[in-house]
Length: 249
Image (cartoon, rainbow, N blue to C red):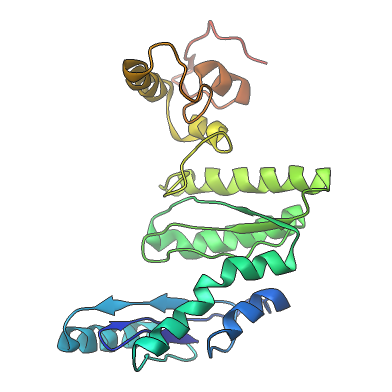
């Protein structure tokens, strides 16, 4: 099913055939008059009325050819806002169906979105955890929401391993471990996957230029080479292990 936005700004939603969404998530989309399906895509355009009409005609054609079961174009600003309300309510809805959720932030080339969603579906089965996906399809910024109970230590462990695999897959397909949320400490090990030792050293050199004593957020954002070695993701080229003086655990 597809859905769209207002007179000079139109949005679309597109569904596909996979699994029935859980009740709480379905409730989010009932805020807007949208039939709940596995995938709903909102596409928005703006400009002069003539530009919008031409772009929406092309959008409708592309979505229809891609298998959209329904395409709707909003008639005014109020209806456009109504269509968007389902997307805006998705995160609160997830909070209704799970005690906790872990929101990821990997970004990939747009042409790999389908492959990535299939990969995440396989991880759901591997780890026994549900994972709705709410993301920016237009720029490849993914927000998988891994559902778990933080009071269950095993679920927490599986959630963190699930998340790590998602981020590392993002790098594998030509993307990055973060599109807007940053690294902090939760993604610091995956920095060892995305960047080589020389690049990490350069990052640290830039930080030292502003923080010579290492007082600002120590241990965050950029991993030490020793950490990468311990994580087992130090890049090896031509059989020559970089920085052999670093201890491996």
